[in-house]
Image (tube, rainbow, N blue to C red; front, side):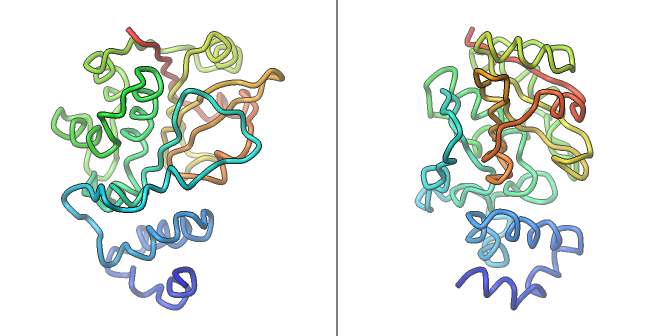
Length: 231
């Protein structure tokens, strides 16, 4: 089994450096559905291109008990694009930004012509990626205009999150170090329940996407919040 192989061969990831090795092993431990990605990393890492014939992980992952929204849930470590080059750590570990924006694009337009891989390539070509740091905030401000979307920044507080989601506008949150990330992360706030809990589409974590969240916790760790609508 893949999990057993990973546990028996942690040294297979040493050549990528201690930090990346830790990220990969922690991802496998936290998200069982990411285990195939982690298992294949030593063989396929930094492949220059998508593997559209690979297993579509997002179609296999159904988060039970969470209300559905019109925003699809895509994962950056999906085997179709997770091994592609992106920033310093590769797509599966660093492309939370392009994957989040792809969810917004597909959900609001109904189009699936742009994949997370495509979004990542466009982000790199247009200078919205910093090697070793992932996506810049301009990705969420400038790129949407090219995609037929309106975007605006909302105040970083729980009331703004509630009001925006209740009006039907999804949000991308830029969070800093805290519960959601050790360094920083982007994810989608896809909707809100009748009792005011946030439906979270985290491109990195099935575990976090399997819970409903208090707007206060998300606001407390957010550095910026971007709302979207179809132009």
